[in-house]
Amino acid sequence: MSAPSLPTLLWHGWEPAWSVDAAAALAVALYVLAVVRARSPWPARRGLAFAGGVACVVIALQSGIGAFDDRLLSVHMVQHLLLLEVAPLMLLAGRPGLLALRAAPRDARPWMVRRLEALRPLTHPVWCLALFGAVVAATHLPGFYDATLRHPVLHDSEHVLYLLAGLLMWWPLVDADPLARRRLSGMGRLVYLIAAMVPMTILGAYLDRHTSLVYAGYAAPARALGVSAVVDQQQAGAIMWVIGSTLMIVAGLWQAMAAMVEEERRLVVRERRAALGVERGPER
Figure (cartoon, helix red, strand yellow):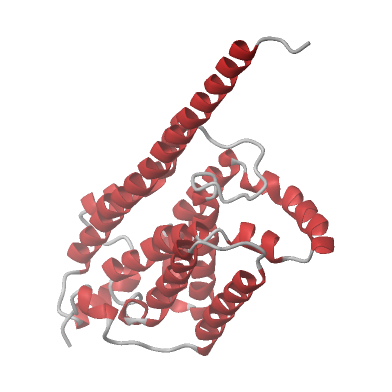
């Protein structure tokens, strides 16, 4: 058996899992129900973004990417990027928190607000960065990583952890908190983005430059597929280093520019109001 190319894994080697399908169907059904119950029109782009995020999770876990993630590190790294970066970003772009507040009965909204207030310390930018970096670093330690290849339950738990860490990492950048009192400024988002890129850049560069196999569990599967495990490891490092960083830069800069434009718009509005107040003069 020869090693498949990464693009072909998107449509070959699918292995459906009822648990993933059920969770995906439930998430989409609840989102659609909330859109129907919302008391104001909901932008279609948000619904499409949320559906795309769910689709990314399904592709990462059930397509050929999921089937080969324990045989080729490069494939596993693509899966990690989908779960850490792409899927969380698209899910949060769907603004599920805001939608839930709009769709909830009026008497239930105060309770939901209190729950969101209680969770706010968890979504502080510093804590989000710390948890994201810790997850990326800890799950790629050789001992833990090789254990995930031997124990399916631990492997599945790692996937859930990546998705949660990705959601927290993107949370401050995309203004996912529907009740945020303070948001990161445009410059603050740039600093946050640079800090978030550090752990993935270091790990990717390490794997790309390392001349011996870091994860022993990939030696035999790579040999069976007729590829060098070390070369595949270097490709995996390049994927995390280059592609992962590029995705974060594009999405992060987009959000930073959007924040700067919004700050400028608010400044113009304040200046216009101040000018109108001067022209009218004090009321008698």
